[in-house]
Length: 140
Image 1 (cartoon, rainbow, N blue to C red):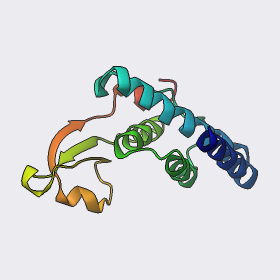
Image 2 (image 1 turned 120 degrees about the vertical axis):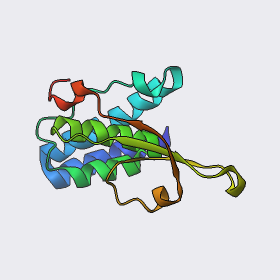
Image 3 (image 1 turned 90 degrees about the vertical axis):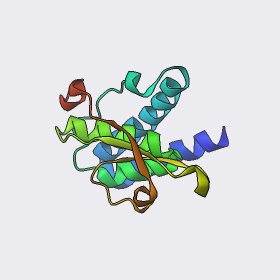
Image 4 (image 1 turned 120 degrees about the horizontal axis):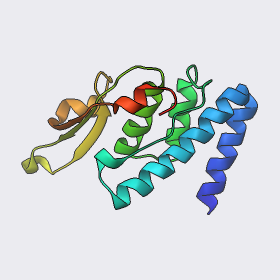
């Protein structure tokens, strides 16, 4: 419960510093991470469905990343929320999931294609998930 309070306090501070667009973006990000977590517990990657970000979220990339960090979103949660955020701006970004060789100690990682992600360089690509077409429309 204390962690939830810390996240909400951080969202509130963001809103005070960046105004209403930043507050709405931070709040959407927190809700989206929680939604992704719930959906992945009971379904699979292809079944994840997220509402679109607020219409004034386009210029709020820094707020999005900050809120993802505050929520302690894992790499897959981050990739899904960011994919939805970009999709609302009609920027198609594909999620890539990779794994390391089993001999080196198995690890998996998810990122968006085109990201400058150091960890992805050590991964062998396993799966690609293109952005759902409904996410490329602002209302999807």
